[in-house]
Length: 205
Image 1 (cartoon, rainbow, N blue to C red):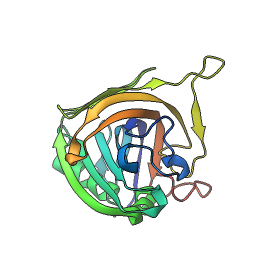
Image 2: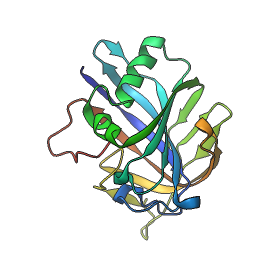
Image 3: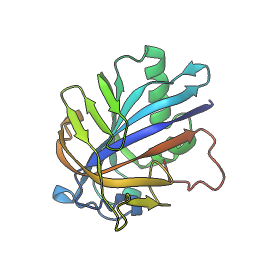
Image 4: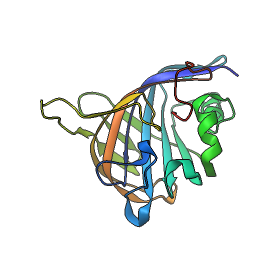
């Protein structure tokens, strides 16, 4: 299988500022866990001959410890405007069956919670926001640096992009029964493919 996708994502989680998961640190959410949602807008993408452009989806996570310890719970929500063929293609990719970065991360999944369909909304801009039906609604607010610019993390061990903006993203989520109140947030452009560049860190999604 050959696949690729690019676009932008925005996410939040239950960790205190700043979430230590990208550097494989212990989560700082309640009970020492990290519960999060990352909402992706695919500007351009495909799996073989199935076009994935324009689809929004959600990657939901529960991390019981530092990321490399594994045992993750992972669930996916796909926008209800996607066709059955598109939803099946995305499940194949995110479950790790088509290789690429999600194939690497699938080795850390402890419990695949499955795929649900719902209205997923992604709004771009200086303060990206996302919603999932009545289950999730949050807006990203970047942390400012001393020069007034945004704060970023670059070349982290785990991350959906080589560099991403970090900030606050409050809002409650109850997808897959993984209830949490969001504190930390992040956003970036992303590019994933079944064949990533040789210099891309192996464990970066």
